[in-house]
Image (cartoon, rainbow, N blue to C red; front, side, top):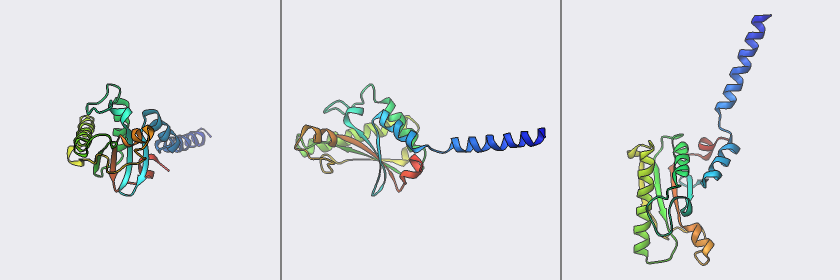
Length: 166
């Protein structure tokens, strides 16, 4: 009888640990929201969208002092895949196109370096500055411009289910 109870307890423990080792999508989404990251399935892979206010002060390319939680969370998500990563910088349409290309490239490079410092392999990461060429909202309102000022990290060819769970 003791062996049967012991075996039953062992099987239950293994089942419980197996269930815990899987990703809980709702928990993952809550962690992303707490750090300001929006995760979506895009046409080229999984997109991690980080608004400007999470990483940078307006018109700056140096990381804010409080950017670490969002970057650390992004690294957790990136480590769930070994696929290539593109760090994209995006701006609103205030200022010249040339200036915004420079700012978006500088921000993408800054984020890529921060990811590399946190253990994401250098050969895996490329950067691109898009300036205001890929808006996600209208630049006609302050709210729309704020949404367009962002950094996106694309895990190329990856699925959202693999990164966040089902």
